Image (cartoon, rainbow, N blue to C red; front, side, top):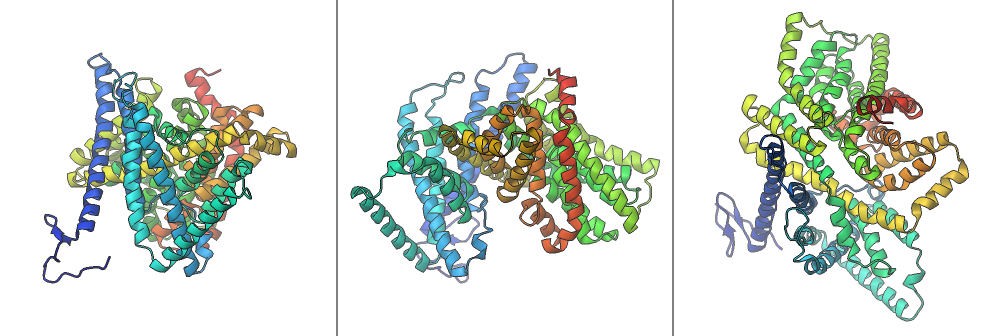
Length: 637
């Protein structure tokens, strides 16, 4: 559609003007209304989630009358949040993909590849909508067990959310250059016709295709072509169901819904929202101020502050990306002004953030708790001492480098300055007390404690510190919903993928391959560490554990490795993988904050990476570091 230029505020013929905005042609008006409707819906869902969970807490402890079915309503809303927010994530191009291979292609080839991946995405989304539509009448009239709402609301979330995503993807496809679009469309039509003809003539027999090869090969190919990860996981699963027979294609929407329908996973959007409220509400700045007062006077004090501040901040935000963004923005400029090399500052922030993933609350631990069927409370407790081991190793390295390089020393904080910093940080420090106190005392679940954290961060940022304007709340709600939807879509699509892999006994095949090399526990642990670090660097944390976790946990159990200990090893590996040069996304974020190049940072970062790996080995091969706190405090046997 040709762009219509308007002069002197005059609307083009047939255009409509939104109140206070520019004139819009009818198609653009529809797109704008769709966008605003999706944003409004996600805001309502986020508000409803917090309201329902906190109301349930109040009724249980204050009124002493639990609300029946509140958990069911909350998980229903999470399903709606996943698929409505997924459409907004598609519009913002936030669904993760791996562009490492496509970036090496010439520009013309990249344009054709993008069209191809968009067509695959559209095919996947269209099939999800169709199968979900088939599922709605099958669930219509079936009441939920507790709240009694109609169970067709679950597939209806897929129908509406994925339909909106389909419209957004269509608009993005239409915006691509026309020549590559026509060429790829023609080639795709010819390929489909040739495959159909070959099947009809008996030259190709779909039943003879190896299902494992189709799944893993299709995933690897789409990954290399820079398809969104949810498509790389979902499209091969779709082909399996449609071509190879076996399970009914209705398994696709069923497993997608099952992946998001989990009360524990509600902690993810709530902790993400807490982190955003902290960043805007001045909480993280006050925590860093306390860290400076405590250790800023040591040799290399600001570097030590980064590690201590990360422990304090990560224990509230729950997100590694939030950690590196917040700590990097606060401390990299400060370290530069104090005389640190910019690349050294980036390396310290990155290493501290890689360690900080072990400090609860950790969103990755929530996912692992679901995969391994472990209590989230137990996992949170297990993370404290391994985090302390890595933090101590980093602080020792900083101390050695500070003396060797003669890094600057800040003036020791006076008792009055320390008292003032403590007073400033007192209110922010109540937040982890709320989170951990409610969880470890058994007063609230992890999800409920996350809802309480949202309310507290909101009250502090908006009404006490007044650093979070009320007008920013809709944006924060939408942003947290979109980031959460990206994570939950990955969980949902990986649920289908891993279920089909398990059906074809892929975990057993991998187990046999590993054990054929060596049946020793130490070899399996080392192999697991290398694989999880590499996958976390390539795919980021959630996709890596969602894909690999169901495969590797049974092998670990067979090798006599406890699920709790193995989970902490995985979390530590993911933290290192997120900052692994040259592709770790966390290192990219830190470099972008400092406006420097990763190749310049690499030389400075290698010693910190080495120390993190040594700390990981200690945690991996001394299981008592992981298990002692849960054993002592929860009475585990």
